[in-house]
Length: 415
Image (cartoon, rainbow, N blue to C red; front, side, top):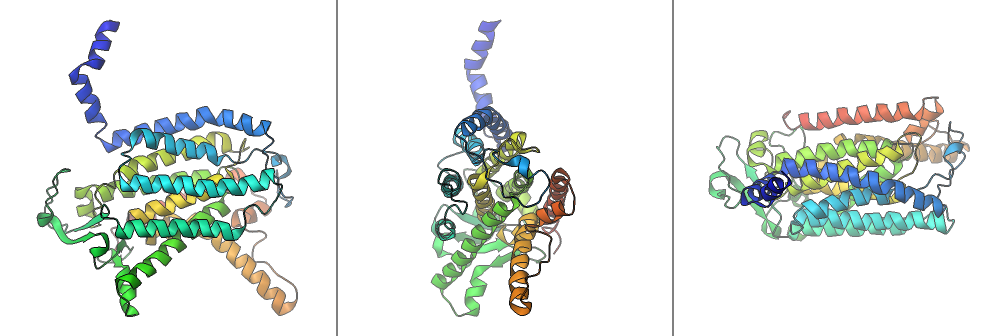
């Protein structure tokens, strides 16, 4: 019996079957989730033990919140678990020659390193402020420049506008552009840097339109594109960081957003689906589906240890890198202008902080006494102050996030 199984595994027929299985993105994505869950679960317990042994505990401020004092000493830097859960399945399953995969790996490692330095300074150098804000911003600015440069100039980055009235014939090895393409964009030679915009009839927006308003040429168009990309990466990365305030909130929210982005990447990489939805077809972006599947699996796997009561916090190592990954993936599949919708939780958290600080400074200058809009910001702490248990807050925020993802999908057909 054993000999028959071995012969079946090494037979040409079995080899062809396995090869065919790995040609399906859905199979690779499912496998990426499974491997990611196993990696985070296996390495998580050892990393937690190691961090506890090294006394890598979170210094919790006394903010008058329920259960806050009990969290003191909980290990941080849990983002290391998340990054392992993302990178290991990516290295095993993704096509590493794919420019999108390379971009996501660079994003994960670079922002993970920035976050790790911040956590290291807080924990081992006993500096509560962590890495200076200017260095974080520089790290995000550098990443934004890199992403903008690659997506704008690299010849492997191509997009096609599909006319949904034309029946599409597509072969992975031989794409007949003459039958399906209305406009072909490639590298710096294109006239427009297109992206998806909700509630628009053509569902697309060009950054070149902004440049034309100011009478700028291609270089001016790129500068505008670069500034927008830098802003998006910085905003989403910091928004994720602000959301990481109560057990399971950031990890669960990122898992939901990652699931939505994986679906967006799939429909953008599939010529028939892209034609039906009348959105841009982006060849080779299907590898992003596998990467984001690993991303989702990693976030869910981390929740095993981060759900209330948390055994470990992700720290800036996790929150900064997760936000940056979401931003870069959205940019790569031309959905960055929809970020305020499907990343609405990040947007609300960030807005609550901006409003709180701005109003406090204004009232202090105007009346001599600073006043607050919320009991505390970010807004999840406001609800804590009102007496809601953090598990209830987390679950409700997840529900809102699912609702926002659904709205984002709906906008593709509402024009």
